[in-house]
Length: 427
Image 1 (cartoon, helix red, strand yellow):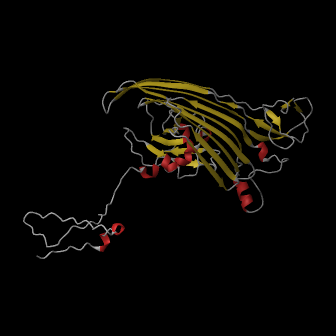
Image 2 (cartoon, one colour):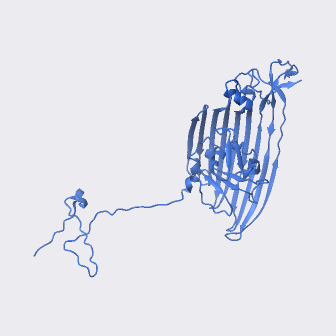
Image 3 (cartoon, helix red, strand yellow):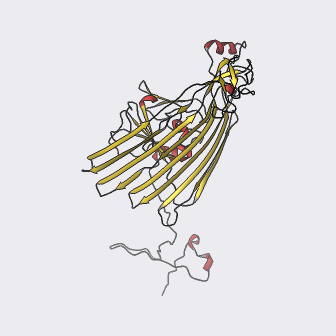
């Protein structure tokens, strides 16, 4: 009797257990087919190719939208690829419906928006659905870039449930950072031209016990020299957020920010000044000489303090009925100064001492803009494509400003009008 021996290829032999004979798996014969003598099935591991797919969001600029109106969104994925010194306006520069211009690269002085021959005066600005009173020029004072989850721009007219009265250009809504469920934090640093430096730190509490509450706190500091002429800007900013989850589709969210900023006002040239400097026969852009009427220290804004608070509440009462409440409060106060010539003999110190005629005088403008309000609405889903909304919006805004005339300090800098012991008054 002859016995046939099958030889296993070397590449599949188990060299770790040489004494153990390699297993041989004989392939089952198909009906009507003849198996060659000695044929065996290879034990080699088959190659496996895994293919996964997901929604990358077009780099954070093509989020899936289900709204019945046009909406353009910039998400955290895109903002993480941009400079953290950028503002909300810098984040939406690439949107097709907007033309955005900013005054500097350090995120200190804001900018402007234009679209279809309209400017940002015709655009509503919201943070978590609450009104931002400072406009595009100062939106960077209400939230740091790292604490923005997404920015939604709705070109054209606004929805009827939003707290806006004039929004022919559209609505821009900034969604604040949602605190994480795990304890942690974020730190980043920036440095650039014009002695620009920025530091940012954010701490996350994570879930606090079984309360369903989680919070975050952040602080940032930015400093930059003026890119035109002499002068510098300095900014300190604090953000705080908290969220309480109620069930699977209800929450209470709180956001608060405080901003203090001093920045040098840019001295843009006239056409004659520009060409004079171009041909080497003149200068412009602010002087570093404290005795000059063009000294940058008497042409600056601040300290300007900005406070912003909002408390969005979203409750799903039934499968079809939802309740939303968004109270908000904002307050801004500060000073700006500009040279108004030389001080004459009619000025005296607060203690009655006459001011030298060589002292420079400046104008101060106090701006106080308290804003408070709230929106409340009930939304009922009739079907997948139809809703009924009933709501009310209350808002109150006040703006006060005046311009007392005073003299600068001995070092040429504008005085602090809140300090009456150093303020000067016209006799």
